[in-house]
Image (cartoon, rainbow, N blue to C red):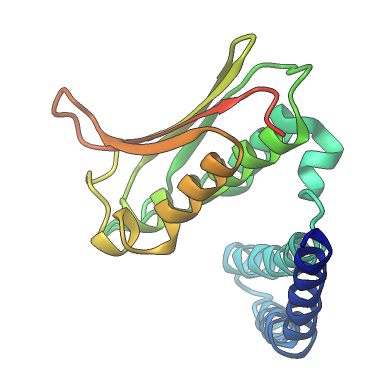
Amino acid sequence: MRRVESRARECERLRLHRDLHDDLGPALAGIRLRLDAVSARLGGQPEIRRLVADAATETARTMTEIRRVVDGLPPPDLVEAGLPGALRRLGARLDGAAATVPDGAAATVVVDVPDELPGVSPTAELAVYRIAAEALTNVLRHSGARAVGIELTATAAELVLEVLDDGSGRPPAGWWGHGTGLHSMRQRAEAAGGSCVVLLWPDGRSGTLVRAVLPRGAV
């Protein structure tokens, strides 16, 4: 039975490789080439050129990230900097991103994590990072938040991740309960033996709180 399951997983991985190579990879490469072409024509507009160049760089990073996901490898930031450093890098990449508000104001992202987290399993690290990335991306995309915080605390047994925002409150139904965002975060938390919920502020303040609790030694 295990051999059959292992074979099925390998077949699925090969299928994803083919899809990445034949469809998604060329599509992302084409987007990056178009962004590079636009950037080259914006010599007199340095600020816009910088934004386009940043988008091209992010597209290239996404291509690498997708390949690592398919291969079952952890994100490069997690390998290079550990969980605290990876979360700081994540926040830095999205700090100042355009929020979904009428004036297109930039959102401020603040990361508060321990300097070191010894004894945390790779499974727990990966789950925390993926949940934080999903939550932060969706907050900036859907909530209109001006300020977002990523907080990670640890006890001897657990990791508690909180992503807080001052956005418009409950996200659209497609993200809140029927789309991939919350479902994906819940799945990742449960696969690591933990839980993930999205809460409205109880005191009437605008905004939401994504809270994930994971065992520190998840396997």
